Length: 292
Image (cartoon, rainbow, N blue to C red; front, side, top):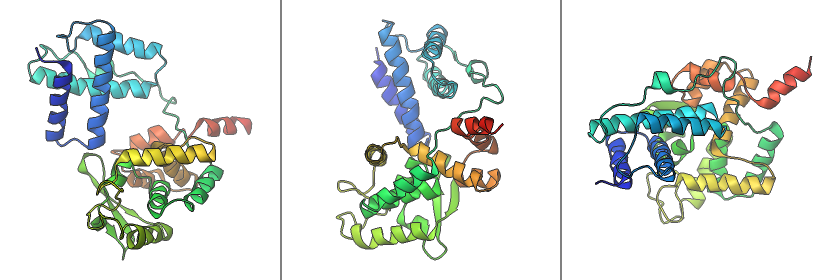
């Protein structure tokens, strides 16, 4: 009998062969692994991979734990893909999950509320970057002024940057390309890094823009660790997606139309932008009510 661990590894290889993005694969595998741990905690027979009963009871447990609806829906999506693959491989006899039926309905007006940095926190973050290495300063600038996902930042190639036009070509989710104009200070930070710190690296010939001391391509965990340590120094929490939310929110506050924000963020459609940024933050909602 094949173990759940071996099955999960085969599922991961299939996702790679299907050309799924690295971040998508990690998300799917993590969600399936959490479901497997749930089954183990319930002493479910090792030969049972997925049934309708165990799926629905798992969702109920997530709801009782007060997990956000958006997070539950992400797990439904992951388990649906896993279910389809299990059925295709004849490991289960049916497709038990329906996206239309099983996704949690989110009422209009209860769109996701995002956490963003205040203008003062952004300023403190930028001041702190002056004490960091040239590479870390560049990472901070890219997060602040481009709204890139961490997976997009670590995959930037040197050839993706056009120094003459000041534009960056980004490979987003699903391999979709978008072009982002770079501010002068971001270009300057990039040039300083390339000419000084990176030029003396043993990986100076790497095609990747960002390298580490141990590898010719920076790992996304290094970006997360940078933000975590910076947040501890500054006294407020920072994570990569918060920087992305902050980028989009600041654009909207400064009068940039939502269609342009959507294109810069690389959202698959305008509805995704509306979902997250029409109701910008809890603090802004409270501020609006307080003005009455």
